[in-house]
Image 1 (tube, rainbow, N blue to C red):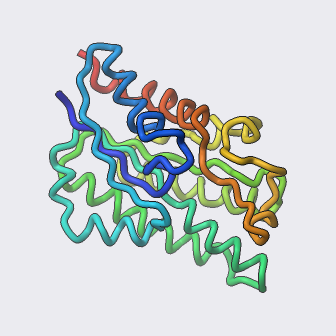
Image 2: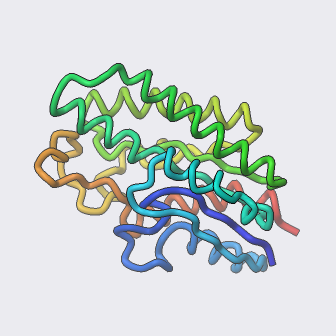
Image 3: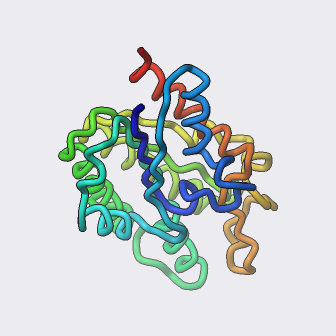
Length: 215
């Protein structure tokens, strides 16, 4: 039996999936079971968590991480949403300031996981729920550059969730409309994966995890 810990926010929590068993952490463990690997999933995630929230929660007591064989990290969507909503309503501070603060917190998160002795860490990039908005495209691109840099610094694998979703957002995101960031101002923000989207994430993560732990 191995322990798989999924760190994140509402996506990892499974918001908008039809059930917790359809969320990607559960699907990863199911895929491992089909390969003869018994895995226990531990989901450490809450809706609305930003990178600051996750870093603070882990830093309070990171000892729970020491039992993990594999840890995945998917965090940052709420950081971008908060910034994006502010910039749509009024002139916002330069995005690089927000991104740099995000990267420092991601470094803390990945560093704590590494310090606790976890051998296999996979850091996920962010997909773009608003592919038809230039501001979202630019923000996601810059954030994913920093996610990749942080993963390399902390000797983690990178899961390119952005590439898995690119061009298929309409079929992978629950309640997808037009893919414009302005929809969020009217309460129509569709940002979470549907069941098919969770399956895409799980399949991609499984393809990275299984070679690391197969018998």
